[in-house]
Length: 567
Image (cartoon, rainbow, N blue to C red; front, side, top):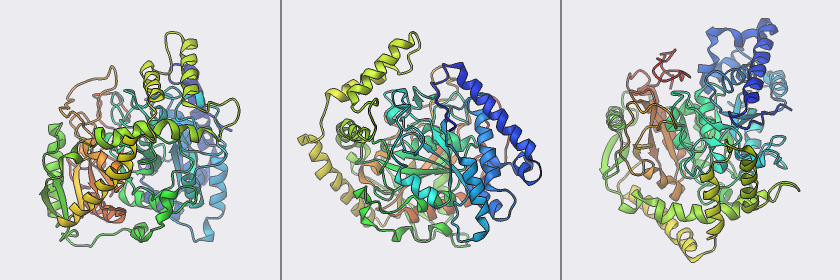
């Protein structure tokens, strides 16, 4: 079993072990010879390839799944713990190469889906049999689940190859330390190493942006996938609540929690969601058993006309809080491109409470559900593992006491968990009011609002501000005047409606920024078609298209690659 039980960048041995692993894997590629040496051929540029491109290469026999797997493992070993030290990966899965080899042997049998033989990574709050589910915490670094999460089983049944688990904000709750965990340290943004990756799925986003895997699974409660996608220029879908099972995932707030795919392209994202989705007897939120809106998303297409979105309407929200002039300029250009595609952007005024959902809906549910739901999840672990939030806090404090001047668990995280311990609210009248009346009303009223205005989606910048500098990072060209940059993102969390986020270029500082499309209830397929048309249209737009690869360089250095992405 290949474990990378890192204790953050504070311990030098983690970097040394990563260097040795990378050198060993690179050597194995070079020594393979013949077809097995294909990943060593720089002309393939596998780190730049999107999921659909890799699918085509596998089908044409230009590369094998074993070669892909070895390539990504070598790249992780060479770049995650040394060089730019992205800190995206916590653990590597045992048997990934053997599984890839086995899939290669059966490739000619046919009947395989688009994910067959494609490697991927998952966030460390998602159960994988044989690996710990630590939620990024050192106190759970030996917590081994009984089996893999439903979403992992779905992807492996589709033929995908698990490479490993990604770093994350500890327990998915930042307490001011977004992207940091006591196990993995701070996740760095591959586009600018001194910038944040924002939400708790930081390692999953950074892994795809750095070319460590063609797709990743994160979890989104209050923006934990959409924020990192915005910070790293990825395509991500927060699916409708219940579209994907949450069984086998450390909960944050089950009223909002959902796994979510992160990719470089719209079509690739749709493939992953199609494989993830489905009814699970262990998660009643999935029991609506309605796959009809997902039909045909494995072969997305848009009309081959100059105005493929003719007749569609998107709502541009008035009175939203702007926070950055460069984001606003890019957003205006996005609306121009949508108009050119035939879509009609219309100004709409949402009720004011939709613009400020944290205090009245999202926050109270988060605070009430975290502790009891976490403790129910912890029951699966045997003797010697913590089973309550109180035990977790005590072990964190003990770790810090032994660490001296460099405590692995930040004091404000411990204070935040202590606050949760003293504020048990699940079952309180206020909580019950929110989940039984307020949230259903928000859902009903938004659906009616979109119907009355004949809207196919709402459109807005995913966040009002770019990814901020890390502590000690350069503040050049950073502007954020919004009080709550993610205010509109809480709409999807509170209502359970799907939201697709798409890259819309970078700031002058080289940091990606995204635009979001919020759809009607369970309308992921409609959002994917809008996104596909947009991404195809802007592929050659110097302002809205991203370079093919994040530079993985220090601030001020130009990207090494200037090719544009394919849609």
